[in-house]
Structures are given as structure tokens and as C-alpha cells.
Image (cartoon, rainbow, N blue to C red; front, side, top):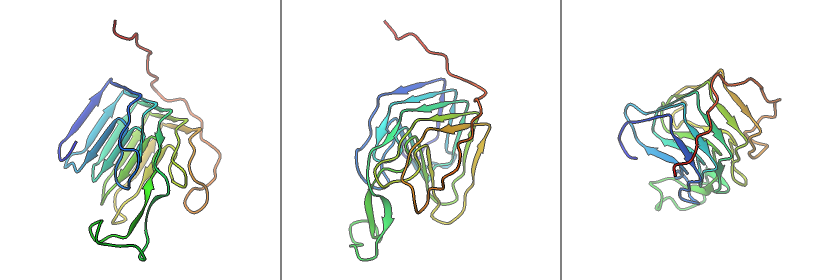
Length: 188
């Protein structure tokens, strides 16, 4: 979706795939590029989705609020992350020297300038970033060092990403989410 506002309530996204490689692309289930008022996700499940970045949800210049939802088994399948190498050609990518083919944000990916991301009452479990990439469960970056990442009453555990430069090793916080999705029968 481009330049719109998105509201997702009580939905299930399972087994979807977005673009497999590339920087600043992805969103196995949903990808939003540019949004004045952002995206809102409530009581929804994202399971086994995959894309270059953002196995489940990706936002580029998109504020995002996620409440009481589940993200599990999603994958950022790109590789090499997205970084800047001044020795590379700047003509192809808007004056940037961007290298890498994604992989950031196994479940959730947020990139942009002064963009806020709030995750509340949500479980982010068993997701994976791509080879040499970051944020197995969640990847958040800001082009202008603005924006706020808020994680409240949520569980993030069993997610995997690259170790080293940006990924601290800390024991996982275990706390049950306030809401757990109820399995639904598939339509006949």
C-alpha cells in the first residue's frame, strides 16, 4: 500500500510471500510505503510469512501501532542487510551507495524518518532475520535519529538474527501476552 492509512483488526495472514531480495522492500503479508497517519494492527495473527525484509509487516516512512497480536514463524529471507558502501555506484539508488539484499526484520520492519513504532500486548515468537541481517523479531531504524520504539507488555523470544555489530545478547524476557489468538476453523 502506498500513501494511505491502514487498519487491520482480527485478521489472519498465513503463508504469504513478498519480494524475495532487495533493500527497502518486503512485507510478506503487508508492506506500507509512506503514510501520514500510519497503520494500526489489532488482535491479528501473522504466521509463516516471508519476504526480503519484514517477513510479516514492513513499513517505510509509516508510523505503526500493534496491539494484542501474534507474530510467529515469519522470515526475512534476503541477505546481507542494507548498508551504505561509498565505494559502490550511487547512480542506481537515488544517490545512495546501498548494498545488501535485505533480510532485516523477521517479523516486523520499520524504516524512515521520525517514525514511531508501538508494540503493546503482542507476542513475537520464533521469527528469523536473513543471513547477515538484523532483527529476528523486530527491526527499527531511523534516517534522522528521530522516532520512538515502544515495546509494552509484550513477549519477544526465540527470534534469531545476526550477532555482532548491532545485536546485543541478553536473556529473553518472558511474559505472557494479555491476549492470545483463538484458533479458527477454516472455511468450508
